[in-house]
Figure (cartoon, helix red, strand yellow):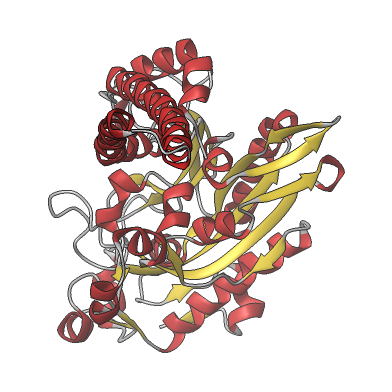
Length: 432
């Protein structure tokens, strides 16, 4: 896992990165905890050595029939000091581990400086919107009888949905369309477990900030019977993206350099509690608690990761171009990038109902952030290095992609034209 030594050896770059992020991450607290923990550990080792020596002296005195009372009293004091430190040390180490696991990644120098999403930088645009305005997707799909939000809310709660008929076919067509493209590009398809243990989630993402967005699965009876450590290992969470489950799949691995990169494409339903800010996107299926996503995930040598970063972005752009959806690529600034990525580009697709470009794809180079925590390495000329991991949505949340297609391809008569690239998958040129 990531160590305090790693932080000490890279402290200058870490401090500069935190400053650029506008982060209030408590780096000084971490350093103080590290110092205190090392001091206590050193003292503990010294006391244990004294205990071993004292125990031997007492045994020898008793064997020789001599008085050992003084040595016994001194040994009792040493044992009490050991017990005190052993009781105190875990609180330092637990807090230190938490801070290490949730430390933001060191930013790449090319990430633009900014305080929030308003200062992200547009890199390029592609395509021309077919129309400047359109009916909101939820209203259109409800009228066509293809989307039922009311009944889903009744049976599951807000932000769930029923897709019906041709709309359900469109969802499946988009999934298979995206998978076929990615497999043709040399990616290995992965259908991962839909739940993973907490210890792997802690390694794949900043669980300290993210845990409230996850759905936790636990057995109350078992939870009472397990220790805190066992719960830490065994608590299960529904995955919010296949990226995390695939990262866990390659944890504790060492790869020959010649075998890298490993290119995976994951397909799964994803589950998230988060529901947007202050009621935004409350209507429809743009921001929901359950959605499908096809995810690119690559394990790379350090020297190759930035070229692969561009490749993953290009793969996603290729899909939107085949679907003929107008989009723009945005370089995410230091104040908006999130903890895990060293650099991130988003792809935003034009939504006619609002006249805005909205995010469908996030493409990130996480460098060694995940591999340090999940112990993923490769052999490089006799040296073991930590790999770089990269991830990118291939075509966006499938539900958001449906929104983009419905709004960009809706017609005056209420029907929805199917993009040419999907006709062979869904078997018709229009729905509704």
